[in-house]
Amino acid sequence: MAHGAGFVTWVGMRAEAFHVDTGAELLTAYESSPGALRRFCRSCGSTLTFESVRWPGEVHLTLANFTTSIDREPQVHSYWDSRVEWADWHGRELPTSEPG
Image (cartoon, rainbow, N blue to C red; front, side, top):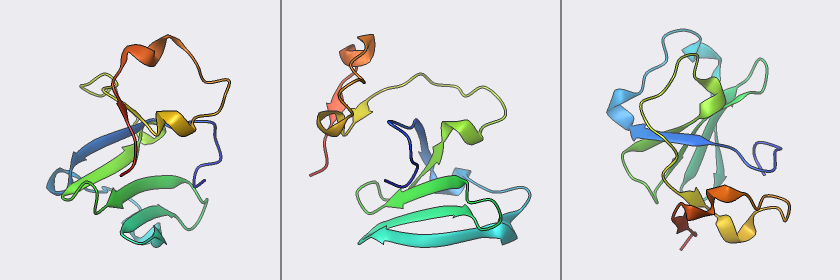
């Protein structure tokens, strides 16, 4: 688990639309599994991005890193079948996505 929480909210966007305004020199990349690249701050350890061959051309950013509202609502529960048992809330009406 890269983020140490029961679940995390990711926001996906086109890679060309993503840029870091300040602190890019502090980012470190780590291939957490084949084809999956995670970037985090080497100063404080905060998770920032996730990129995968599963979603080519996309960057996924943790919602907690946004300082303003975003223009979308949750669209899917990823890895729903491997969630922690206590995460069984009304959000089930969202479609689910499993690795594969």
